[in-house]
Every structure is written in structure tokens, then in C-alpha cells.
Image (cartoon, rainbow, N blue to C red; front, side):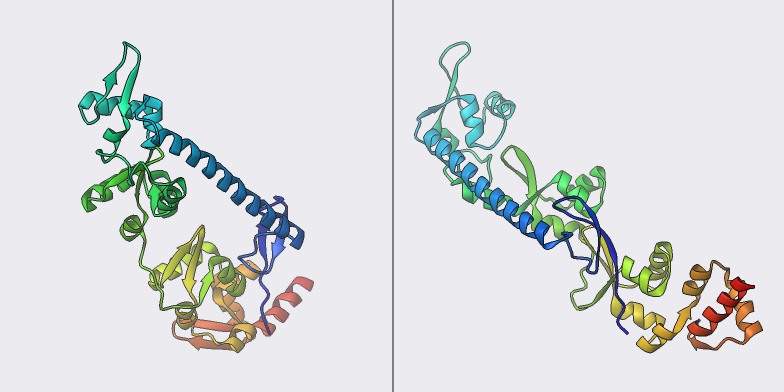
Length: 298
């Protein structure tokens, strides 16, 4: 018998709540999926148009011999205050035309190392370069770490930052090596926490405690924690037929809202068939269901 899982989801296009049979389902219907695809394609076209406009403006600036503070900041993908600091520290030469007008030679910008890439690099290549980097805020969210812990580890590992479009960024590959937990690529099949709760009738807290006690391989995909199917099934030592015909103790206590000692009393009093698996026992599902249903009718 194949178990059908149900997941409470929210459509990423219309925001409507729905029930899905796969954890990867994103949309409530084919209509929303098609509309989401069209919206995604439209966003890509708009992004391309914006890049084209930025590239034209960039080429115009690169054709000028002298640049204003704002134009310099745009070419270096940084802010005006940063340009003023560079001028004050002597890192960048400036020509004062008048008391309020300052100009910078474009050729001088090619001599400084402020941006990750040369100033004449096309916008499309700049955006592609961004994909190899990650911001501090994105890192804190992705790896669930604190701001102080981030800077402590980065400083110790001597990971250098760079600036693109005025944002402080770090190498995505180096950050992943620093903060990502061990990857278990040798294991192909994984349970989600929701799947284990549904299949084995145990609570989320029980799963976390059990997997921690047994040191099972785990990994995180987005907000979901995945647990090695091989290790979970092996630790329970439960075959497919047994899982369909027998309750585990946590399943039985949670389903019938009774304590472990009460359950053991029932097993002894009614001589319910059971199977011992290491330190665990399996209770015959049909027999226990009949006993509990008859108790409710009395």
C-alpha cells in the first residue's frame, strides 16, 4: 500500500492555500503555474531592458575624460560618501574646478582597485559576477547565524570582501565552505520532518531529539530539514509490511492520547501481539485499534 502524503502549501502566484501531494509543488493549479511562468519571463525581459539602459549610460560615462562625483560613484559601483573618503585619504586624485565643483579623470579610475572588475566591464558581466558573491544579510539568513559570529569566523579565516553596486560582498564559495554543515552526498533518499511525522505518527520534537541521539545525517534545504531515510529506517529496524501493520510506541501514544505505562498495561492485559526490535517494540495495529474503539463505545 502506497502512503499518500499531504502538504499544506500556499500558492506562490495567487497566495491561495491548498493541499499538495509533493513537497516541491509551488502552485495551486496549472493556471497559476502558467501565469507564474509568464510573469517570470516578463521579469527577465524587463531585467534585460534595464541592463541595456544601464549599459548605454555606462558607455557614455566611459567616453568622457572628466567625471563628477556622482558619475564616478556610478562607474565604481559605490556611493558618493565613499568617493569623498577616497579623495580625502589620497587614494583618488581630484581636480577642483571651483569651490563647489570637483572633477575626476576617468583614466585615474583604472588605476585603483575599488571594484571587483574593471570599470569598462559590461553590465551583463557585472551582474553575472554578482552571482558568485553573497551579502552579509543573505549569509545570516541562509546559514542561520548571528552577525557577531559571522564577522568572527570571516576574520579568523581571512576572507576578504569586495564592493559591487555599492554593496559589501563575499565569495559565495568561501562563505559556503565556512558555514555550511557537512553534506551527505552519498545518501540519495531523504525524509522531510513532515513525512516522518505523518508516516510514524511522532511529534516534531521527538524527531529532533531522536535524530540527535542517534547522530543521523541531516541537511537543510531552504527552511526544510531533511533526514537520511536509510539511517531512520535502519534505526527503527522496521520493514514496509511491519510499518503498515504495527504501531510504534510513539505512534500509539500520540494517536490514542495515552501514556506509555497505560499502553504497556493494555498490551499485558489484552495480550496484544507485539514484535521486539532492539530496544523498541511494535504493537499490532488492528488489535489495538479494535480495543480502543470498543473502549470508546462502552
